[in-house]
Structure formats: structure tokens, C-alpha cells
Image (cartoon, rainbow, N blue to C red; front, side):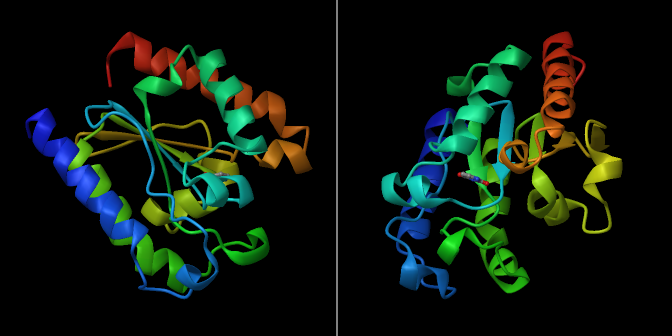
Length: 190
Ligand code: URA
């Protein structure tokens, strides 16, 4: 797909997402958070759901988890500007609770359509919710840091950057996963 067309598809999707009323999360949101990044990104990052800062600003990963993500990306040698960042659910669940299965399922077509437009080489899945969107039977403890090729796409599951806030022992595990991701992206075999 030519870049202008990809841009148009992503912009159209973002407009749909901002006015979406398909699930009850629209009732409490300030802003839906469609995601952001270049339409020709070779790497897409999928988080769980917007938090308070993201809901205020309508942008993904701009709060504490976002700062952790920025640090991890720089450890990987990947520039944030080069990746498309989005979430499994595009509206903030009240009180930052985990998104319900029905909310994830209702929102999934937006994620699928974003990925179909971008056609990235690599999709990084941050945390259990994102992992289960693509690999419902997998568990993060087993799957993290292990790339899985499906069709032309390499999926790379890892822990959510916010998990370090509650469990500092995961910091080194996440750093190691992101260094591995950086090496995979750089060696060009994916
Ligand atoms: N956590 C997420 O999963 N996504 C965000 O955008 C912010 C925090």
C-alpha cells in the first residue's frame, strides 16, 4: 500500500476510534487514544489500555509507563519516532482496572485494521492483555523474550513497562528482552 494510502487508512481509523461508542468505556473517557507513529513503521508496539495521562492527552504511553518504555527503547537502540505505538483497548478503563474480555474483543478490530494497514515486520506485545490478543493460550512467564514468527510477522512478547513499578525485579528481565529486540531489529533478519 502506498504511504499516502496507509496514512489515510490510519487517519480514518483514528477518527472512527475517537468517536467510537461500541462499548461502555466511551462513557467515562475524556479522549480515546488511537495510537501514533509513522504509517510505514516496521515495528508496532501494543500495550494494554490508556491510563489517566493518556486519557487526558489522547496519546499513548505519555505517563510513568511511557517513561519506562522510552528508557527501554533507548536501551534497545530503537527511536520512539520510528515505531507505531498503540493499545489493545483504545479507551481508559475507569480507575485503571484491567480491560474486560468483552472490551478487548469489541476493540480488537481496530488493532487488527491498524496492523493490516501498517504491515510491520515486528509486533511487540507488552504484557498479558496484548499477548492474549494474538496468543490466547500463551502465558507471559513462558513467552516473554521469545520471538514467534507467524506469516511474515515476528511477534515479540515481553512484560508491560508498568509492571516494573509494582515488581522492581522485572526491570532487568525487561531490559534484557528489549536488548534482544534491538539486536533482532538491527540484524535485519526479521
Ligand atoms: N499503559 C498502556 O498499556 N498503554 C498506555 O498507553 C499507557 C499505559
